[in-house]
Length: 274
Image 1 (cartoon, rainbow, N blue to C red):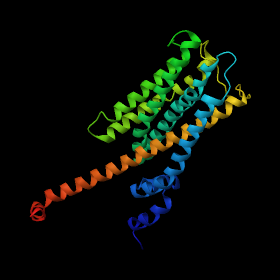
Image 2 (image 1 turned 90 degrees about the vertical axis):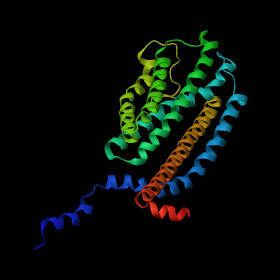
Image 3 (image 1 turned 30 degrees about the horizontal axis):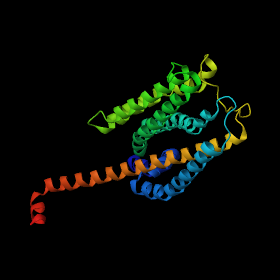
Image 4 (image 1 turned 30 degrees about the vertical axis):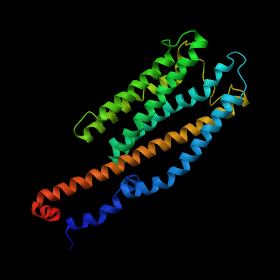
């Protein structure tokens, strides 16, 4: 009779969860670098082209608003940046879940690289919002519910960037950053529905799942094209940064392995130098 201890290893591969296996297929650095290298040109080049087309169409060819005049053209920079500020943080939270639940190593690296890119788009959103607010509201800044919640989002990004780099042990930094990212998710619905929940100066959303867009089609199309281009560029930048982080980790691992080998056999290292 076969001992139970020899049966368990044979059954283990059949009992492994398929979701975990599919997620960890991409944890191999070589496989990730090959796949991301093939995908990167297909999102970077269209992203750049769509961004240029959308901005050129919106800034120079679209009509001025009957109320706001040419000041409304900043919408083609401000609105896509605002969407990606929230969308980037949602992606950061998803990576945090993958890290905490499935211990996916690439999720940690991706989250660390999403943080600076998301913070940059949030800063762009705040800056363009201030430029837009000055002619419309007569001031650069008001403690409006929408503006304040986006400012909190910016600080959450900065907090995540600081946390993941605050520990000597990178694993502790990744865990702390993941927890902060998940706690900060509560701010996303506040940003989205702040104009509906409170009486604010910020205009209501131009897009809704239950109603037609309030923008004229001549303004809507360049905005959507610019937003798609921004989104593809966001993904391309994050993917490029993640690829660099993976290669940096691989290089560091090779250097540490070589150093450990040299410490274990110092005479061989001397012989190589001679």
